Amino acid sequence: MKRAFSISLLVILHIHALAQSPFSFQNKSIAPGTKSHIKVPVRSDKDSTFVPVTIFHGIKSGPVLGITAGVHGYEYPPILAAQELNRKIDPQKLSGTVILVQLANMPAFLGRSPYVNPMDGKNLNRSFPGDPNGTITQRIAHMITTDIIAKSDFFVDMHAGDAPEDLRAYNAWYQSEALPEVSKKGKEMALAMGFDYSIIFNIKEERLKTPSIYCSQEAFHRKIPSVDIECGRLGIPGKVETKRIVDGMISLLKHLQMFDGISSESKIKPTIIAKRVSLKSKSTGLFYTEKKAGDLIKKGELMGYTTDFFGNTLEKIIASESGVILYMIGTPPINKDETLMSVGVLPE
Image (cartoon, rainbow, N blue to C red; front, side):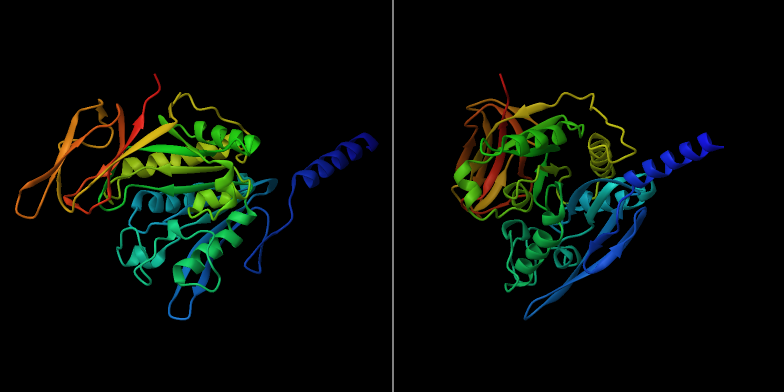
């Protein structure tokens, strides 16, 4: 009887050690083993909106993973993936906490607006860390910075090719010689997600002392391991791309031992790209090309051409490096100094 009591006591103590306290978010308390949907209001002097956030507070202790979708409201696969993750993440089987921003830029989503928030014309992914007294976009960025990023131990920002952007799926991690341990963890996160192309976002030490501008870079500036996902093209709500994002996020949760403490190693050995070059237009007009994202190209190859509005050729676009097209303008309109293509230089 005494032995049975001792064993029971040890089990109780073990369970207590694994359990965690309620999670506080927006003055709300989320109990372990539950999830909570919260509409976070954001108001400026002129505009108002809300950001739908779901908190999954695991039954056992563990890290906090912050995830943002819909920073650009026309990039649909990440937004649909967030909806799917809402159904797949079970807080009763979770160690730690997931803060999932289901849709960061509601005005852009409802307004079907590529790149910018139609309320103030600002790009949310160029507005971090934000301003609590700024325009509506700057205030959304500030809320995400203070309420999601600052609470996270790891962070992922999910994107896709916007309305005019053809894109080849990849993920990327932030890296800096000034933050070797944070960089290492970010790399491990990226490689665990099962993407066949991974990009290094290399950040110089002096850049860490300036405003982040980008959502995931704000996390890295705060010494939080950070990964970007880019999966989807031309604003299409593709099912294949949505599933790839969901699968990658589930693999990441396993890697971080947030799903029942089971680690997972991706069987895919991705091609790692450390250098990217951009081909920019010198003209405003129409862009013609037979290329598509994912194509392998050679230095000196003709990539396409631009014309004026009467069909006269203005410029031939020539590849400056050999590599793979990561993303490109997939629609005819082009403005002077816009990026036509981003090319990843493949390792030799």
